[in-house]
Length: 151
Image (tube, rainbow, N blue to C red):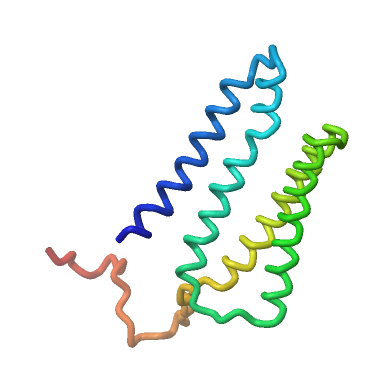
């Protein structure tokens, strides 16, 4: 019960914090507002990561070798992106923040694709139209004008 409430609450909190960071940082009048606007993508990334965890709990297919490689590659992209953002705010150029955010989103996209692939599939139902010949007399035509309508 706690997980069914806690994980969605964390995802919603991430979205709310991200929106608040954009609203507060929008005027970009000082350095703090600029930083808030630049980093407003991180809480949203966290919310997407929580959503991936929620979907992963419903997954039924086991992790294969290729799936593990894709997940590890995605985690590598996320780690590299976070390190790049940290480097941008310490001694590096600030332009690295946006590249770091791009790498984080690429890693999340890889995780989302793998998780969606592992979800149970709905049964496929197909319908076929059966064509009948004009000479078929077994089937009565309800639109025959000679028959009286039934009520």
